[in-house]
Amino acid sequence: MTKLLVYIELPQMNKEQAERALEMGQQYLRANNPVKALRLFTKSKKIHSLPGINTWLAKAAKAVRKQEKDQQQQRKY
Image (cartoon, rainbow, N blue to C red; front, side):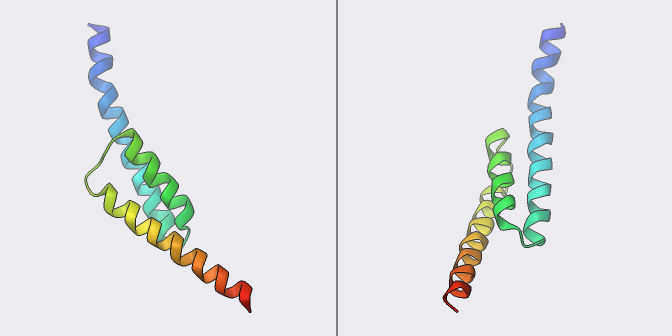
């Protein structure tokens, strides 16, 4: 009985961890830290594929590219 209980709870725990990583990633993205956000969104997807995670991954990847482009332009001047 105990083993069955553990197997039932694991997917729920994984989902909760994925949701937490998603929430933290959203906070980092709002705080203009897209690199950490992207890392957390990727972690969230590996743990449990939540609805909308691909959209957040795309937003963070776009923000990382923009940040890198801005940094390259600043180095030119």
